Image 1: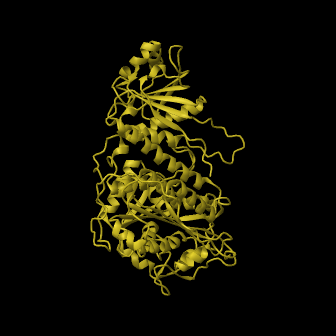
Image 2: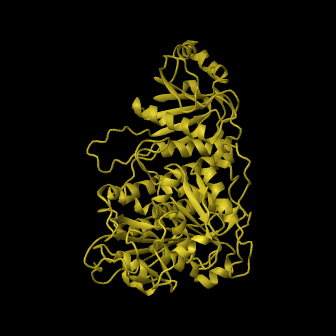
Image 3: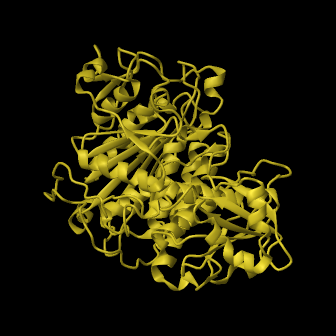
Length: 581
């Protein structure tokens, strides 16, 4: 599925004032502006300083001023980007600087650009990772359905000033292996996010459950993941009655997508053998409702407008698996995405129906528009069968979370303190912020049903995000588990730093960083913060003892070893006959 031209980010050395690019950007703080401008004054005099003073440029964070370059400068356009009043510079300031470089390059129709850091960063590798990631994210544009795309794509970005203090003359920072690894990590995370954005932005008539499964198979083949895709018959064999019920009203048959990343040295001899060979296994579960009409509990027209995005959790999980496969942490990761539409029709699920899930528990359907928790219940139950040491699910689940936290912060709830803490740390490191909400056990009785084990909507309409998480907790069999509700952050109606209007791709970087930290492969859990956080070097995820008796299964620190490329080996079980509905 097309995602547009990919930005190439590289590390550069030498005299930045001679860089032959369309746009040359200089990132400065207010207090360090004079020092940062000296190399440029040698090339083009004090004209830049006078112009900045005339325009009262204060280097406020996220500000940028475009100036005309000179004949003695290698670029026709010079942009001065603000990092704030003074150092040290945090990750958000570096992200906004990279975003402004891409935005200004687009405005002047530049295809090549260079960014010079006007002050030495606290941590070169961490700053490189942030800049590479942010620039790649900011360069994203969804133009698949535009006849004449307006945007001119920035093709290359060179990063200067990551070696010596002098911003004008720097060695090639790329000679440092840590810097090169940081650059690659930032690009991998951003490209996986951008791919998830494309899936979310794609119209639901195109990205059907079958099409999403095909994208997962493509990612698996390219990344060396194993994949298995089940159609209605396979889903029924797994006992996933809730997923089948949600899909009944649609002409599009459901799919259940499973992806597996195994670190080097772990065979594919099945779940039991794998449990003996690897001490660590993480399950990622993502809601994959490719369009949600609300079912017979029909949404309003306004409420239905952007419901192609209801598979954003599934997209985040598949995108994270792509990044995880590229970064090769020494921990096994399994992904589960129940994909379906929720539509109206003669065969559609009805209020009052009682559904039997893969866990054997039954759910009374009170509201068909609370379908996400139904398909997640089945997926969580199947994930538990694979004996994971930690489970994280991610979903656009409740409108209540948007009311509580707005559109820039997602909710996290869970039954394990250390697991939730690790996710909060990963969110802070990735710039994808989380806020913990409580799992109030006293609310559980509001999910009691007179005819089934539980109902899918609480009797009390308040606290909807907590109610939904309490229902999901019923299907994790006491294993360490956390739930991310991203309904408020999955989509933006306006351009944000590093995020153009449309799909955000929230969760890809957060989940990947969580896995890297749990595996002990992250250089620092604060790596993407520009070295400005006092975070632990790795997250030691502890919880209830898993079935093999390893109570500290995720607290590892071994480095990732090279992993040979694997072919996608899953043999998809396709639906036979026409889908119900």
